[in-house]
Length: 139
Image 1 (tube, rainbow, N blue to C red):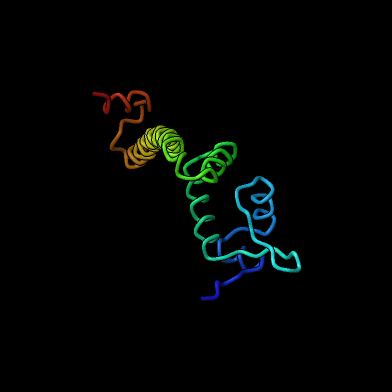
Image 2 (image 1 turned 30 degrees about the horizontal axis):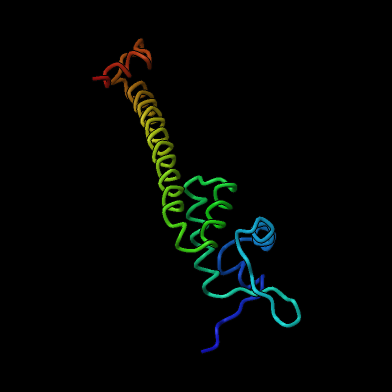
């Protein structure tokens, strides 16, 4: 079975990144395209999956140095599964902490919008401050 090959422009469209970003990822060692007989880089469907996973990791807030560490561990094979798992667990914990902080900030934003609504529809006394309003929700 012949494997589908994509030139960088086609691949960029498939994964939703610019060719500049793909070249940067290559320079950083995050992706390693193959080369044809003429030396032209090409990518495969396996590369599409790999870039998708990299984008998931980036989406969690994983930094480039950690991505590079993960790629290096992956290249060493199954002997590094524990180390890769630990790195992913650390990233997950950081992402969950950031998410909790963002949810707390959104809650305050929601309360502020509600406070404005109450001021506008006069269901909240005009003299009541936002700080006083927030005290209603403290347990």
